Amino acid sequence: MEKNLRRIDPSSFSISANIPRANMPPSSEEAAIPMEETCPICKGAGYFCMDVPINDPNFGHLITCQCKLAEKEGRQRDKLWQQSNLQAFETKNFDTFNSHIVGVNESFARAKAFAQAPKGWLLLVGGYGCGKTHLAAAIANEAVRREYQTIFMVVPDLLDYLRSTFGPNSEVAYDERFDKIRSIQLLVLDDLGAESSTAWAREKLFQIINHRYNNHLPTVFTTNVDLDKLDPRIASRLLDVELCRQTVIQAKDYRQTTRNNNIRYK
Image 1 (cartoon, one colour):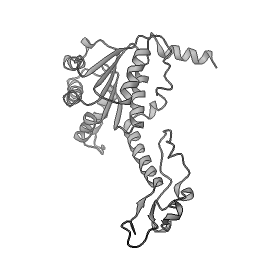
Image 2 (cartoon, helix red, strand yellow):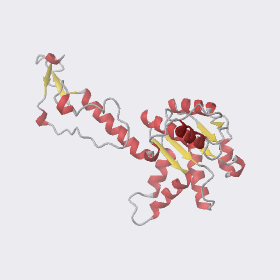
Image 3 (tube, one colour):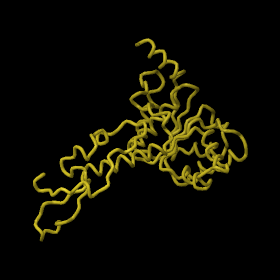
Image 4 (cartoon, helix red, strand yellow):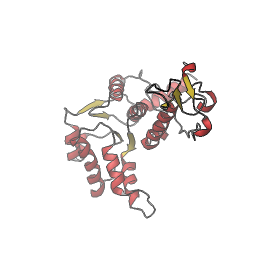
């Protein structure tokens, strides 16, 4: 193929190969050596021309090289990762979840199926330390990998995140942040029911959830409280079986069991 390509002088382009990376496992394309040093097609220009006769329709047309496309995909994945708020949960995925513990099989299967094609709502219910946060984060990590716009938030932190826009040094307007959260492609809300009981907190949380309910936007919730202890308006939407699937994690203490197993097999 190389003999049919006419390379572009790399010096005529300003293309950086050293793309900043977050703490996220690189894809196979991103793991490659910088393109200007190794790409056998464009030699780092990012583009090439076909070596065709002057009367050919493709004569003089720049074609984007595969290495340039991979670079663009890497930047897009970085952007999705940065907005996801998953930095503290990057190791929480389906591979690191111990699905052999008694009481987690069904929830694990449902979470994994949801992550592969986010649609509707998924409610993960269980006591403290049962693994529901790990599964919720695994869904979010998989969604980012599949290039879904995703935000993972612990509910009390979400409300603080909104309140922070009222500060004098905030660079983001409240309306902009609020609309982004309520309209994001996939929203994962961890620890529903742990939020403060102020009227403002209840109303803002309801507005976010109600917007996603009315627009059937994919949403994942975790909670350790009975639904009748939640805001009745939110509970009624979670009980809509046409939109929301509920799964109860029966494991007594996934976190402690996993920790003990890790110690045992060291």
